[in-house]
Length: 455
Image 1 (cartoon, rainbow, N blue to C red):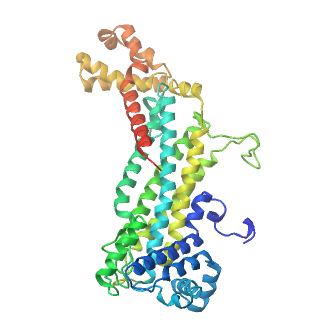
Image 2: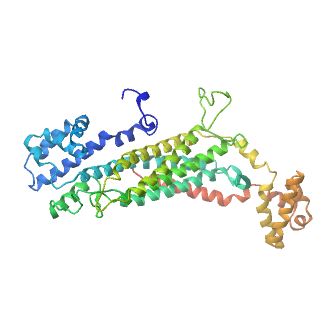
């Protein structure tokens, strides 16, 4: 295809970085399968199973590898792996007869998929660490900025703006831990023949499998039949959907905070950017909206991934077509979401004046829990204190009187508190010590992981 206008799928031209597209490309998948065939031949030649020189002949064939030739051959064979073997063998002369001994198609295809996934995961992990670092930086930057917390969309309690970012950092730290745990099971391959039990080469085949997979950074899947067990891949896609949903959650928070009525944050809006063809004033959170939009697709992919677990007996082909779509889509969508969120956070504008204005919007009502607890601890009792504060809060709502004035003039509060004590209860800072400690703990965890990770 010569231009963007001739492409069909957005991941061909719009989503995902070039580095990841290269890894996930059909060209790279076929080269990886050919390389696995070469490693197997090397191991077999070392053990005298194929003539000397077979591996060298195959290596020369790899140097001249053409995916177009494979596709042309597939029109004849109607089998992609047989087409690959035929193309490689033709350039090897008589030694081409010795390819693919003891192997089946999925030994190449499934193992190559796992190599591609392993290489792709390095990019995802690197960007997840970058995202964590951005969240930690913002948590630190705004850890001394009091704000209002909202529950059900309604002003609830005093909070810290930095805590918003720390909470998301904790969520993505859990995703980091999930990746570490999954990787113990994920990176497997198979070079075990037609139904996975080495009927072709027996125990020598097991030895060759272990050697080749070790060189690829994989372990043998001892539950493999003709294919690797698909519960392993389903777990990967479920994790991706989980991470994607957290990115959606973060994007939704940013979108809500950018609403005109709140206006505490704003995505970067460059000088030449257009928000609407009709309304010249519009500055929309389109990057965050895109993150949320892509999450819908990534979550939907998990259905096919789970259905791929089920196959007839030792294998059928019902997983194959779905995975040709699933693997590149899942990786490129998540990659795009991570890239966009990293850019959003890197250039996020926070209007600290608006944050403070919103904090004071209800004129002290958000301190109701603090007041009720303080009065209860003076010996008044929790239930009575709650009802008294509620009565004053409802009166403030209905009469538009200032809540703090109602509290200061209430005889019960005046009996239990000095005026300066009451005014102090309406100050944010004394109530935020634990929140600051929690933020600092999160920042330290992120930076410790960043220091240890070598990606």
